[in-house]
Image (cartoon, rainbow, N blue to C red; front, side, top):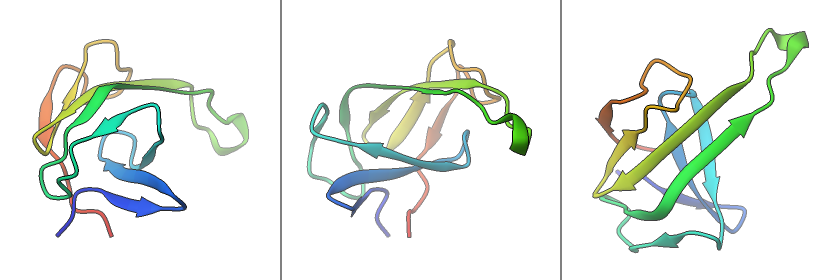
Length: 90
């Protein structure tokens, strides 16, 4: 199964830390491997939060290399500093 897919003309991955998809556009490079993707440079995403839905602001910063997500220490979620295999995306 693929770890990355094309959705609305953008590459999309599932982020288990944010429990949501992250989209990758033309600013990043992709090695073309849908099973063991490598994306450059790092993904550095900010979410402003949503008070109505009780979602606090957060940061997700990671490297995607050879089908693994390396979360950097500046992430504000529980996977900060950890490396995890990418999950299949449907």
